[in-house]
Amino acid sequence: MPLRETEAIVLRTYRLGEADKIVSLFTRQVGRLRAAASGAQRPKSRYGGMLEPLTYIRLWLFERENRDLLRINSTELLESFFAMQGDYRVQLAAQYIAEAAERFLPEREVNERAFRLLLAVLRALKASREIDRPLLYYNYWLLRLAGFLPQLEQCCACGRALAGEEIFYGDETQGLVCSRCRTSRSRKISGEAFSLMEKMRRSPLDAWMASEPLAPAVREARRLFETWMEACAERKLVTLELLAAES
Ligand SMILES: [Zn+2]
Image (tube, rainbow, N blue to C red; front, side, top):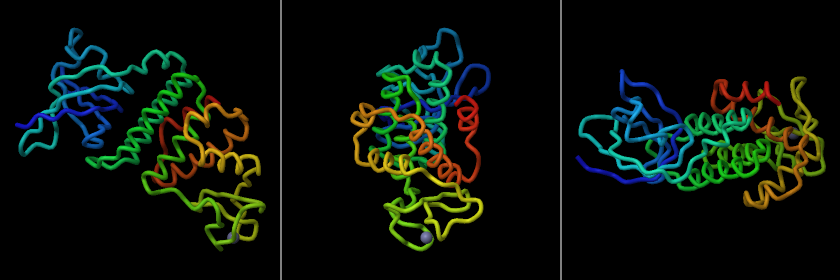
């Protein structure tokens, strides 16, 4: 019964029977997985608040032969993102980060860059309490790291370079299109939002967060990426609808 040590971000928890919990985790050393935590529903559980969603922990896991589900042996708190979730919009943004990670990151596939991305975006949310720039950055990088990022420099239908052109996107396409390839359902993306995306793609998160907020253009770009996120996920993301109702 080998014991593994790993760092992890708690994505979600489910009740298991009267006393236990199933914990959905994105671990640094093993990738995304689910594990059972005995007695985690009890008021005086040894896990304390460590198994709450979006907590960054170190944990020790038992791998049991012939069983898919791992068992959590013990945990240690590394960083809490609990206090920031007192702000409802930030809480929704944090839940969206977890939901998208569950949807886009395959089980048991190590992805160090995605792990660092989650942690960095959570820290940006915690420090700024702003949701638009951290979520835009997260959407872009999660799509890229999961291999779903569409072509952003050329029309996805005819291949024409998009710089200096009128640019459109629609639910039916997985990328940007030029004015010749647009359909009646295509929506135009502003030049401001397009150049902002260019800037974000070249910036580390700290520099991106230190740049000028430009709220309407950031929100526009965020929506564009979220359209792609939902198209790739092939179903609605629950938290996205709640977020849209808030902004
Ligand atoms: Zn075209």
